[in-house]
Image 1: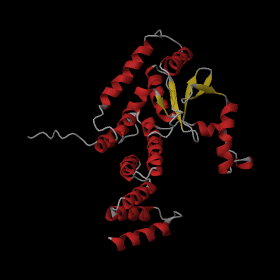
Image 2: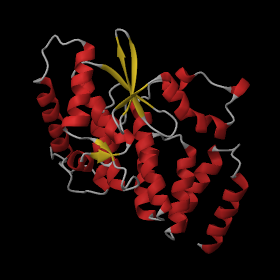
Image 3: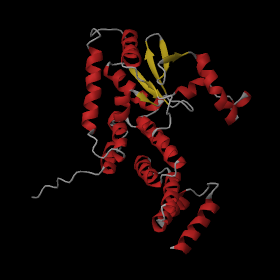
Image 4: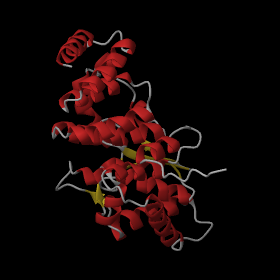
Length: 282
C-alpha cells in the first residue's frame, strides 16, 4: 500500500484543527492563522516557545500556590518582566494578529495578547476565559473570592464601574439605554474558542478590506467559511472580493450561495443585481 505523505495546505491544516468544539486547540489554531502570511512558519516551534515561557513561569511558584498568587505571578511575568502590551504605535499592522510576530515583538492587539495570556493561565491551572467585550477583547479569572476582569492590552484589572464606563459609548450607539439596558454581566460571558478565532479573522478581514488587498482578504474569508460554514455573509464578502479580483464565475458561485440562504437579508436585491451584472460580463 502506498502512503500518501502529502503535506496539508495551511487551509487544510486549519480545517483539521477547528472540526470539533469539544477538542478545539485555541493556541494552535490562532498560531496557524499566520501561515498565509508566513508560509514557512513552524507552528509547533511557536507552541514550543510558549511552553518554554510557561516552564519559566512555573519555576517561580510553589506547586501548592493559591490561585491569587498564581494570577499575580502571571501578570508580573507577562506584563512587566516580558513587557507584553498593546501596539499603540501601529494598531492596524496585520502582524498584531499573528502570534509568531507578537511573541517576537511583545506587541499585539487585545485578542492576540489574550490568547497567549490564557494559555499561560491554563498552564497554571487558573480558571481563566476570554471575554468578547464590545470593541475590546478582555480576559477574566474566577478566584475563590470573586471574578477579576483584565484588559490584556495594558494588564489593568478593571472594576465594575470602569467596565460600565467603557461600555457606555457602545450602549449609546446601539440604543441599549434606559429600558433597553442590558446587565453588564451579559457582556462578560466566556467566549468559546471558535468565537475567539472568528474575531481574530474578522480583525484581519477589516485590515485587508480597508487596504483593498483582495488576495489576502480571500485567504481570510476561506478560513472564516471553514470555521463557520453557515455564516452566509462570509460567502457574500468572499464573492465580492472575487469580483474585485476579476474572478466573475467564482464571485457568482459565492454570491448565489448567499442569496439562497440569506433570504431575509436587507441587501438581497443589491446582491442579486450584482450577480446579474457579473453574469453579463462573464
